View 1: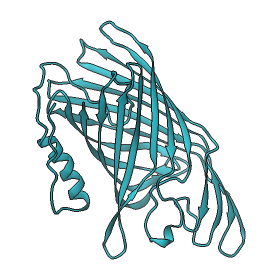
View 2 (view 1 turned 45 degrees about the horizontal axis):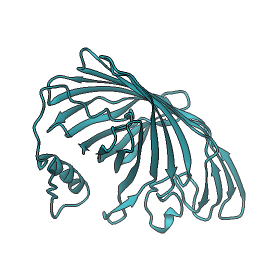
View 3 (view 1 turned 45 degrees about the vertical axis):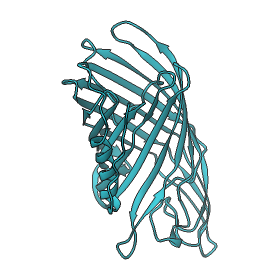
View 4 (view 1 turned 90 degrees about the vertical axis):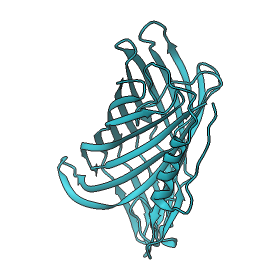
Length: 321
């Protein structure tokens, strides 16, 4: 496969990132598109291990915005928040036909005082996936187990020093994911599902203003609760170039406990309420070639407790080698 990058010039922020993705897609030298169903995966549900020697990269651009929040009773309450542009770059490599390794790099663009913008790195995830079942037959069912380790490479405290939003959690956490996929309708429909569990007990030290609501002068620590989630998705190939995607995502976070002292030396202890959110993620895929495809869609939080009513349009370019 021959692949050319045509990077846009003299652009910034949103224009730079979107322009780069669209240019990558437009400048991909296609080897040709086979007359067969094509899939590049939904927005959230993980993929099974790659074949030995295969490499995949899928840069995302995500617009996070919310004008409301679900309260403790599940009712929507006005809670406007600024639009935040984030990037996510999952990478995966097939070590063997059953084992893949990879990671995800994250970042975000922030609007700072004075209308200036700055890019901040987010937390990084490394992962290993092992295939448990790889059945033949028309359904080609596969089942895999993935272990993910989140590394706190983003900024989560001392935010008053830059007067900028945080970009990380500050905590190293481990997540186990069981996921699988199967083909139906003579291969035109691909389904995926997953369940995940984040081990409780991850903690982070806090100094000053932080993403957990502490203020300048605070010193202490937060202990995070467990996390859990589940997804289900379906991809339907309309023709070799176009694929429709439907997906449901459930996210849950256990209560966290914060302890420390404020700027006046007063002891502070508080426990956050547990939260959950159910989202739908419709999307559409366009395939430039057998190895290059574009997916565009959005995540919409339809119900939940103690969490934002998220609306997150997103676009990604999927490139396989």
